[in-house]
Image (tube, rainbow, N blue to C red; front, side, top):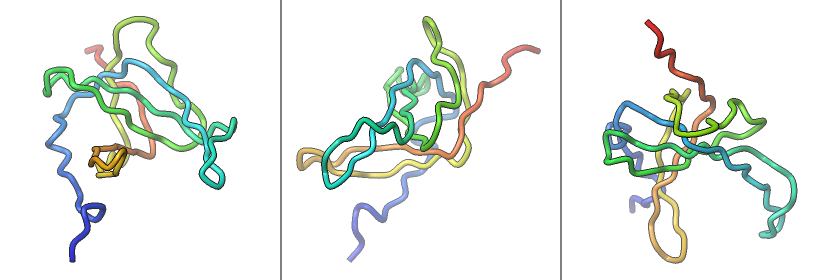
Length: 107
C-alpha cells in the first residue's frame, strides 16, 4: 500500500518565487528530547503566488544567508523538495533543500 510519506508533492504547488522573511535555528533531538545543538536552519518563505502563504524550508548545517532586517529578499533553493509529515495526528506539508542563495534583482 502506498504510504503518504512516499508521495512527492509537485513544486508547482508553491510557485516560482520565494521571499525570505526570517531565519530560525533548528535544534537537534536526541532520544526524543530537544538539545541546545543547532543542526540546521529553517528559512521562512512567503509565497507571492499563493497569497503570501508561508512555509519553512529546512537546510542542515550552518546558516547560509543573513535574515532581512525588514521586509523580505527574493531567494532560490538548491534541490528544493516538499513532503508530508504528521503533527498532532494531522498531515502537514514540509520543505527541505540543500542550499539557498539570493536572486540577483539588478539588471
